[in-house]
Image (cartoon, rainbow, N blue to C red; front, side, top):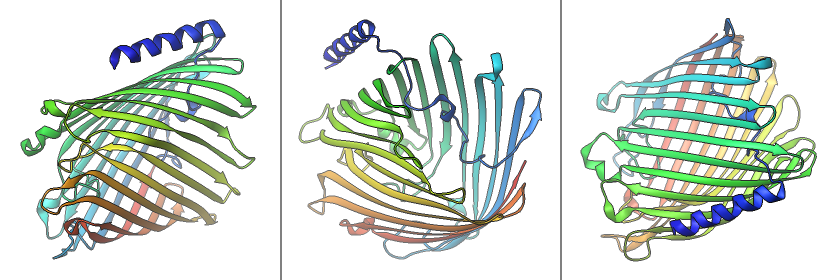
Length: 406
C-alpha cells in the first residue's frame, strides 16, 4: 500500500512540474487563523506591532442530565468561568505575515456532583507566511487538555491530551494551482483504563485547483492517512481518499466549499473491520444582508471509535446555523444539528449493530450593554435516539453568561 501511494505521489509531482501546475491552498491564507470565532467582535489593545485581545466569561448553567443517563437522571447547577486571550502579531513587508498565540480555558464547578468539576484548556499557535514570488506557508499547532464528552460514545468525562498540528505549502500561478499538506493528530488518555485507545493519525494530502471562474475554483484532492493505536498492535490501519469539488463564491451572496468522493480504510484485524464508501464535506454561508447570515454544513465520513468491538463508525452530520441582528445591540443565534452514526460490528450481549440518531437544537439571545460587555442567555436540547437502550439520553441546558472583552 505505502509503495503504491509513494509511486502515485511521485507521478503527481512529475505531472505537476511539466504542466505548469503550481502551489495554492484550499482556503485564502487570511482565513487560516485561530480564535476567529471566539474573538470576532473584540477590538483589542495595541502593544507595538502586536494586538492583544482578552475575554473573561462568567456565568452559570442548569444541566438536566449531568451523566447523560438513559434512566435515573440527575440534574445540577454549574458555575462557569471562561478566561481567554489571543495575540495577533503581523510582521514583514506591509505586515503581510502573521503570527498568533491563543489560550482558552473552560472551568466548570458543580453545586452537587463535585467529582464532575472540570478544567479544559487549549493552547494554540499559528503562523501565516506570504512569499510574493513563490506562494505561501501556513503552520499551526493546537494542544488541548480536556475531559470534554463527545456526547456520542463518551457519556462520562474522560481526561485526555490531544494535539493537532497542520502544515501547508503552496504556490499559485495563473488558473492552475497545487497544494501539499500534512496533518498530525495525537490522543493520549490519562486514565490507564483507556490506554489501549491512545493513537496517532498522520495525513498527507495533495490538492490541485483550476480557476473556473473569477471567484470560484474546481479542485481535485488526494489524501493518504495512517492510524496507529500504540498500545494495540491489532488496530493499526491506513486509508486512501479521493474527492472532487468546488470552492469560492457560489452566488453573489453565497460562499463555501463542497467536496465529494470515496474512501477506502483498512485495519490490521480480522473480519469486516474496514470502511469503503462515500465521503463528503460541505460548508456554505449565505449573507442575506448585514443583519442576517445563514451557514449550512454537511459531513459524511468514517470516524475512529472507542465503542468495542468497532474500529470506526460511519458518521453523517447536517447542521444549519442562523445569526440574526434584531437591532444594533440585540442578536439572535439559532442552530439545528442532526447526526446519524452507524456501527459496523454487532454489540456483544445485545446481538445487534448500534445505530444512533442525535438531534441538537440551540437558541440564544446576546445583548451588548457596551462594546466590551455582553450578556447571553441560551437554551439547548439534545437527544440521542439509539437502538442500544443504555445509550439513549435526553438533556436540557440553560446557560447565562456575562462576557467582558477588551
